[in-house]
Image (cartoon, rainbow, N blue to C red; front, side, top):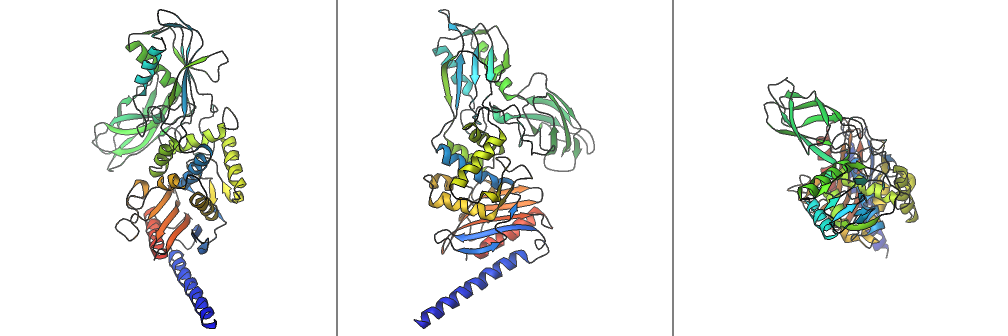
Length: 469
């Protein structure tokens, strides 16, 4: 008995020494010794803490915030949930196939309408067929888009000015269309000259872009759009590679609901019909309407997979805003924040360590502890009815998405299912490591390291390899 106790003590001390050495190796270097780090690693099965550093302290998350957003959406809505967009009318349909009234597009917060990512990009063909089946070929009235499920404040107030107007931070309208993104095509010349815009796709009536983009000796897109929500005036600055034809820089569509209404009007006319009125946007118009067609998105399981694997900000923000619509319409950022906090507080998670202001992690004022992430991930793996769906939505090391180049050709290739996060001065990972001795659940958030993001990633990769042995 004494020998057994002695052996257990020796094993515990040995484990502690190994843990301390792995953690010391990770933090004791000029790159990270003065960084703000929140770190926690637990054994998923036993719940034992294996590595810990300021795990209750909060740090800026970047895109690891998407784990919280997608997990909450999955728990509240279920993997088979589909967003609905309805076509409604407020008049009578005459025998000559003329709607004597208005046609409404009632937005339901679906981020996939016309998306390049998932779903039917050419869904408008289905809509025309559906209208014809309902007996509508002509409209003696208007086509009105109603994005009133979400508030009119479409830009998160905690985002930075530099991000507004760009494709990765588009306005979150109650109707999304074409990922709320257009493509501007540039012809660049010699280094130092101003690049010229030749066209944008899709074409947006009245949209004006003033280019200050310089041609430079670089190989990547370093141009940024600036502009207010709903405004057709944009400025674009920065740099793109010199001597290029049709170089694409993406910006956000200022009013996607209006663009969709215009495109539906044009498509109906092209099919041989007529529309006497124009396309316009109204928020929650009060009139008696009835539904003639309902469009359904792909299932939530596909949407959260796209969100996590590709780190899709647009999809994440729509999930975030939709969560708020379950309690109030039009949905607001505050309603979404309150709903998410209330859900996880009811599950016993430490929401005093959760400071969430958006769904994607784009805001630099988001802050979450490693401890909160680990508790959420433990819940999703051990208690959630949708454990497998959530686990499979995460990128895989050396295999897919934002983790494709992480831990590639190492012992952990294909063994880490996790979400990464990167913004200025922030690098983070949270997820699961399938180690030889069992599954580890972990979160590592590093803020303000004294070095490049690439250097920080190398340290984090080494730490993950060390703890998985």
